[in-house]
Each structure stands twice: as C-alpha cells, then as structure tokens.
Image 1 (cartoon, rainbow over the protein chains, first blue to last red):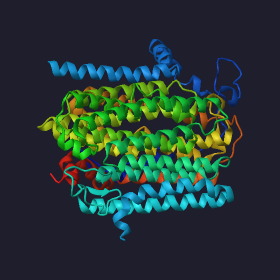
Image 2: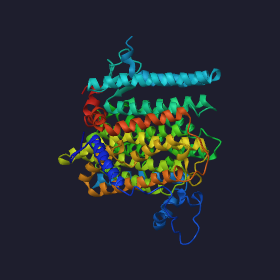
Image 3: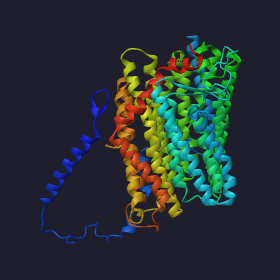
Image 4: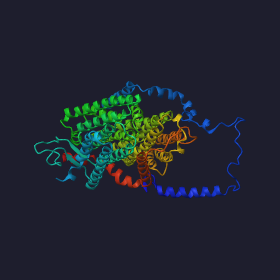
Length: 111
Length: 514
C-alpha cells in the first residue's frame, strides 16, 4: 500500500475491485438474448452506399484526431515553424533561455 | 587486495575494458563477441547490486579516491583539500546507476538478434555509452563529470548515426553532437569558474566553500541550462525527437537513461552544490519548463506520423512530469513550513517517475523498433493490422501504452498520483495541466495502437525475433511488478534517494569531514 498525501494507493485492492466489476458485467451480459446467433444482423445502413471493404475504410494515423488538430491550426502552424529541424533554432533556444536566466538572476540581485 | 573495496572503480573500469576489447574479439568470432559483451555487462550488473547493498547498509555516502594508496582517504596528508578524483556514491547516485545498468543490459539482449553488420562498433559504443552514464552518476568531481558527459555524448551521437544508410540518422547525430558540444562547453566554463574561484574541482568541497558570489551565479546558470537542455526539456527539446527517432530501438531506450543522467547532474547541482543558497527563481523556472515540456510534448506527439518521433515527443512530456516534480520538490526544499512536506512527496514522485519513465517509454521504443525491423516501415499511415501477425508485440505495446498514460494498476499511475497530489498543494493549475496532458497522452497512444496494430492487415510481417521479445518481456515484467508493488520500490529505493538529496550535509562531510 503506497501512502500518498491525502490517502493511499493499493493496486491489489484495485485489481480485486476490477475483477468483481468484470464478473458483474459478465453476469449482465449473460442475461441478454440467448437465441441470437453470430452473423444474423442486417448490414448497417450507410446512406444507401455500398459499404467499402475493411481495408478501404481503415482510418490511418494521419486522420485520427483530425478535428482536434484542425481546431488548433494556429497553434500548430507556430509549433511546426519552431520544429523545422534547423540546428540554428536549436542553439538559439538554448542560448536564449540561458540569456533570460542570466538577466533574471541579476535583476534579482539588483532588486 | 580486497576487491569489494574497489567496487566503484571496477563498475566503471570493467565496461571500459570490455569496450576496447570488443572490436578485437569481433574480428575472430561474432558469437564470441556477443558472449563477451553479455558476460562483462552481467558482471557489471552484479557489481552494481553489491555496491547498492553496501550503500544502503552504510546509510552514509561511500567515497573512493582514484589512484590513492588508501581509497578512503579523501584529503591527502599534506593537503587541506581533496586533490585526486573522488567517486562518491549515495542512495541517489546508486539509484541512477541501477537504472543505467539495468536498461543497458536489457537493451543489449534486445540488440543481439538484429545488430549484425558493424556489431563490433555497435557494442563498443554501447559499452562506452554505459561508461559515460555510470561515470556521471558515480563521480564526485566536477571536471570528471564533464569528461564522462563528453564520453556519453560522443558515443551516443555515433550510435544515433549507426543506421547511416538513412541520411536522416546522420543528420540527427550531427545536430545532437553540435548541441551537446555547446552544453559541454557551458559545463567546462562553469568548472573553470569554480576552479579559478575556489581552486577546487570536487563537488562536496566546492559546496562546502560556496559563497554564492556573482561568479557562482554565472556558473549556476551555465550548469543549469546545460543539464536542463541535455535532459530534453522544452523549449530546448528539439534535438530529442531527432535523436530518439533515428537511433536503433535499443539505443533510443538507453538514450532515455542518458537524458536522466543529465537530470541527475541537475539534481546534484541544485541540491548538493548550491543547496540552500539556490535562488527561488530556479525551482520556478523548473516548474515553468516542466509545464512547457508536458504541453508541447503531448500536442506535438499528436501530429506525428513517424512512430518513433511520436514516442519521442511523448518522452519530452514524460521528462516534463519529472522536471515539474523536481521543481516543486526544490521549491519545498528552499521554503520551510507546510510546503516542505509536499515538496518531499513531489520529489519522491519525480524520482520514482525517473525509473517508470525509462521503463514505460523504453518499452514503447523497443516495440516500435521491432515493428520497424520487421516491416521496414516507420510511417504509421502505411501500417495497420499488425496484431494479426505480431500478437506478443501488440500485447506488450498495450502494456507500455497503459503505463505511459498512467492507467492503474501500472507503475506510471503510482508515480503520477504522487506528483498530481503534491503539485496540487502548490497550485491546482499545475495538477490540472498534468492530468489533462496524461489524458491526451492516452489518446496519442490509442492513435498509434489503432493505426499500427488494429484494423485489416495492410502489411505482411512476422513476430519479432526471440531476443527482441525477451528484452520487451523483461521490461513489461518490471512495469507490472513496479505497478503492483509501488510501496516496495518507494520505500527501498526512492525514499533513500530523496533523503540523500535532502541531507546534502552528509554528502559534503563524507569528503571534507566537516
């Protein structure tokens, strides 16, 4: 049992709780229709269009979270410029942060 | 001669000796070379375990004077100050050494099955990288720290460029060595300033003599910026996705441990060298840089299509959690009262997360390395359905994914919980950002899992070779073990490490006797 500031964390207790919840979920699932057989469902309606094959509708990595990225377009355009891969930028950020710290520590000394 | 007395020196000397012999053995037998490297690495691991036992039993830092007739006489009879190179090992340094050797050993096993061409060079550099890391973590001498930092940087750069047929890996290595050289110059300049001011190079002796003059302030900023940059903290993190992304799988994992060696150096500078004279602006800077790393790391990971670059950006965010916790810990250390207790908890969470980070992100890199090795493809858009043919890899990736995202009951959850709670006491905003970023982290890895492993099979691939699988299984086993028994790790490894950092007086008096 790991003591934290406000309480504790016990992974074993969590696993026991997880198993109990999984058993309850299984019992609820088992209470469903028993006469149902696999493959009986009708094809999902796809606006009248023939459903493409699994290979064709696989969502590739690029398209996942498209909406999220699109809504943050402004932020990402700045970030992409910042991460253009130019070594000059890498050094500039490093030296720039060091310079800011130098200025800050000496301002503190004066004040 | 009592060999046990010389453990600290042997832990550095054995891999160094093996590194120089490896290319010679490689000329005669490849299998012999693999066995040789394995035996020497295993021997180093055993010695580290023995040294760790000594350190935890002795309760005070162990010192070892290089080249002296009496390795425990830190100050020579005719002198008032330490002159020789002194290795100083407390619970914090041995904690880091355990991480370095364990991760290198697992990385070595992983590499056996796929490093065929140029293996002699690879293992030599791999051993040198280990020497650099361990040296940085064991040394009590600032100039020696610079030397080991250089060994580490040069060997790491060569390993990043190991797959030199791809131009991008060579470019990443060049960028890495340029930025590392500037950081090394910063460290060397700071060492020179201390030597000019105090005529000393030993960390404990300088800490004892510290007057926090204007020169000391300059040295502080130089050391602080160099190690924060080498740790991969935003906005100085840009070299990290290049380096991690282009290195071979096992090297990417060990590179995490190398950035953590820089974090260790940062902790040593803040808690031991400057200790209470450290200005409050330093923890505030760490908190800001930690938040920036978390935010930039997760948001940039979301738009990556290269598997390893994506994981590398997630690694930046993970470093952010550690730096944020260290910042809060340092803030508590410098302020007395109620905040001190939260600071200690934050520091414990941060130090625990150092171990968890290298395991969790390391596992992701190993699986990604395996996927790239088997498919020759690193673009996620061209991958899919690999769970059909790479069942074990996909399960192991799932374990790593859950651990990195901080899902219970795995190890990432335990350390992140400690961090969330303690930083909440300083400012709830810090906790909110950290938790939101963790949720984003989960979504990022769901993206990788969905596009690489699930869905219809779009690329043919077999399961990874056995050695690769063995390395991944060991890491996954450690993740599960750390997750199920976090209190064991915190009580036996993390708490002594944090106490060693906070009781800096013991580190100083072990050398100076004051």
